[in-house]
Image 1 (spheres, rainbow over the protein chains, first blue to last red):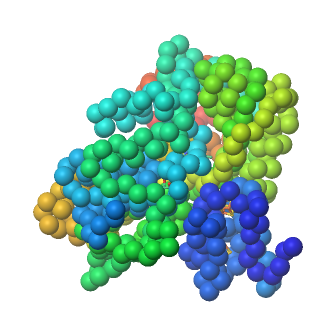
Image 2 (image 1 turned 45 degrees about the vertical axis):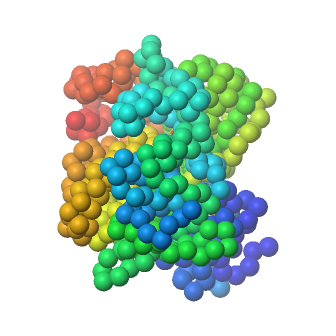
Amino acid sequence: MIIMGWNINKNKCLRCGACVSVCPKIALELSEHGIENNKNLCNLCGICEKICPVGAIKVNKNA
Amino acid sequence: MLKESYDVVVVGAGPGGSSVATHCAKAGLSVALLEKRQEIGSPKRCGEGLSLNSLKMIENYLGKKIPSKCIAQEIDGAIVYAPNGKKVIIDFKENAGAVMERKIFDKWLAEEASRAGAYVQAKTYVKDIIKKNGYICGVTGEFEDEYFEIKAKVVVAADGVESKIARLAGLDTTNKLINIDSGYQFEMVNLKLNDPKKIELYFGNNIAKRGYCWIFPKGKDVANVGIGIALAEKPARYYLEKWIETKPEIFNSAGITEVNSGGIPVGGFLENMVLNGFLVVGDAAHQVNPIHGGGMKEATIAGKIAADVIVEAIKKNNVSKEVLDKYNKIWWKERGNELLKVQKLREVFEKLSDEDLNMLAEVLTGDDLIAFSRGSKLGTLAKILIKNPKIAFLAKHLI
Ligand SMILES: Cc1cc2nc3c(=O)[nH]c(=O)nc-3n(C[C@H](O)[C@H](O)[C@H](O)COP(=O)(O)OP(=O)(O)OC[C@H]3O[C@@H](n4cnc5c(N)ncnc54)[C@H](O)[C@@H]3O)c2cc1C
Ligand code: SF4
Ligand code: SF4
């Protein structure tokens, strides 16, 4: 289900960190628990969605 | 166990981090090498290809032979495919490189850091940087459930493409979409390879915009099969699966034993890679060859340069950015300027149409490309110019 805002499909994510590297707000974190988004920092720019090799991130800008 | 303070704390145990740690430890500094993964080197984010030059250079730096267990397959050349399917076979007729087994290689590099005297610890997540009086002077993090704080005279970020540590420290290492490839790869088995001693590269806008596919053999019927793309409409995975379907003669009965992905910096080198008490190396500093995306060698070289500068700075008891700036200077002189040229060349290649690429494959032979890679650039150029003035604009970028 796609909800408003920043969404990750943890079943698709391969924990490669490509999204972390392009996030201009340093809003993403890759730990042993997988990718996490800091909603206080994220401005829903959608850049991380564009780099993700498996299409695991969906950003809905009209949140 | 982890101590409260070290001369040098290195974040990330890839080839870059292990290189810094090994050389600092060899010079007698106390070093901690911290890796967040539970197993160093796994899962890989890499096609695992290394040229013979790179292998020799790494051996020289370490003063040791790379154990054969780190090498999956020796390579003697490459087959390059133009968009129309025309092959250019590059045959060195002798060992020219290898496809590594990175989970073994990376672990071995970290073991060498340990044998040199560094304290290595996996499953240790560095969360933040400690700053004091304008200096980076330690890190905080988590090991299992425990929070830790470690002091350091110098912190080195070798945390790979994520490059979060440098950004938390205050250097903007964010990758721009224009300068990063999106990579996706299967390790596959039961393949019908043309030649298990040659890597294969497939070019063309028909594969994906700014994309190419590779097959890096790891045995008779095993290989890394991957794609690197940029600024494409769909995720990399889509284009790789689509391309594999067009090649039943290779993939018909193949199975998938591993799925990998990653971002590959292909430009955007940093003028400044230091702060007071802080340096950044490897993928975290975008130190990757912008054409073939190889970064193991670059991370290893930068790690050595950084270590030499750190050792000198600590000896002088001055780890200010003015002193550490020597790392910027040496890296740019030894690697940066050359890599910048490669970036420009990539930018030119990207503009070539499929027809241009087909034409290049018509004009150039494998031996031309070997001569080119060995430094005889003018001959290759002359050939392009004589046979095809239309793509003469390549010439000025090749010198
Ligand atoms: C699809 C793909 C194919 C590639 N193919 C090739 C190839 O064929 N040949 C080649 O030479 N290069 C290739 N590369 C590039 C190569 O993998 C990298 O350049 C190389 O691994 C860089 O080494 P590094 O030490 O800088 O970073 P890495 O090897 O990425 O190591 C960084 C380490 O830091 C750890 N880390 C990150 N954050 C933290 C933290 N907060 N705390 C603790 N640890 C942390 C990570 O877990 C990781 O182990 C490829 C890359 C990709 C994505
Ligand atoms: S880029 Fe995609 S696959 Fe990679 S860590 Fe981010 S969400 Fe996961
Ligand atoms: S949407 Fe933009 S700000 Fe938010 S996590 Fe993605 S890249 Fe970062």
